Image (cartoon, rainbow, N blue to C red; front, side, top):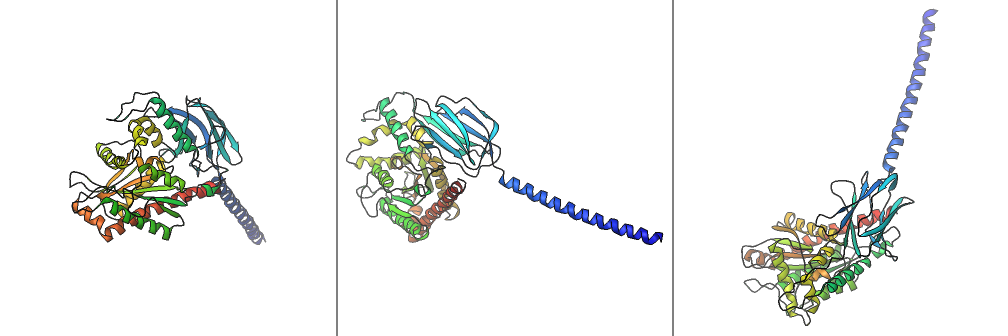
Length: 431
């Protein structure tokens, strides 16, 4: 009798252990699922705000210290009361957060947790402030670039040109900052349709009495770039749900400043100016794409001067006189809210030229092109190649060459729009 009783006890104990094992497994599964849910919903935490001087001495950088990547944030928005607002979507403010003392461009600032977002509002000091925001590549932080009106500096006019005084330069900068306040930017309460990328302006350089660069066989830049610009526009219209506006669709002369104004009046959200290069050395070849900024090489300066020389054909070139002495203003404009978007598009274009079309890329560069000044949107100027190089001139003149170059520009625009729309969707969905 002892043996059956023992076996019964063993079976009973085994059943209890099995039930306990099932309960432990279920608890472990629920705990894991709960932890996974918590991790996926945990919002980035803003732990600190600090300030530092820009490396070039032109303004300051406000660093927003985050403990993990942020899905989306707004570009700085200029409010009616004069303050500047930045929204960190789906984030939380650390209960022991640290706020450093503001620097001279910022009189004061406040940080609030409003529902699921962190709202930062800056009150500028006596100097007008231009602000832009971007991600820090080496951390999870968001950096807010702050630049102000330049101090009085002596101006040396170019030969034969009246030199603008410092008040003129300051006024020009203030006007530029004021214009930037009207640019569509994503905010927590903005209407998404207002800043959707729905209109692209394509500018065929030169035209009419301005032939641009000439090839040895007489091929004119104005003809090459018009053909390619129209091809790019056609590809965009056929494949993207956007409106295409051309600064010119035929052989006509349009002042440089008027091209930017046309882009603004058309409600453009992207401005692409297409050109061809030339150089005294017939061996020079390759593509280049520029965005607005300070030139950093003699080669970039020479390209800028050649393209800007068009003003000699304009009836009234006085509007450009002060540009020649606007180094400080240029620096501020180059750091505007659209600088990084312009650079991203330029990089995409050069990548397409080099890796999809097989052209030699001379890279992405900055320079002060007049045609880019007036466009209040991400803007680039493309140099398709050198008409002074026999091989490149023949390529740009051929149907295949024009098709490949136009396709490359279109693919870069499509990539840019896709990334832009993704950011727009994240901002809208996280409000």
